[in-house]
Length: 104
Ligand code: FES
Image (spheres, helix red, strand yellow):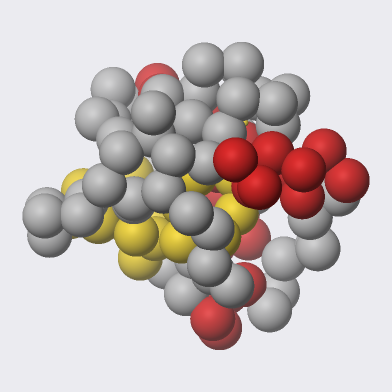
């Protein structure tokens, strides 16, 4: 289980299925604020999320494609930024991830 918090403070709790990314789970649940336009190939930047520090430290570092795409997200990246399609939902169990104000 993890939670997504929209920029206006609404929190939704999500139960991932085995092996899903955060983006997969959010799109399956129809969450506004995660678009996932490229289907998970780290090329569109419409699944931008902010991961809390304690969970960020547990994730594998971004690969080259994710690093590149984080350079042109609609809301500028911060140190907490990741692409939800590259984050295994199991790795953020219990976390509250923040969504940017927009993905375009
Ligand atoms: S779904 Fe396109 S970058 Fe994540």
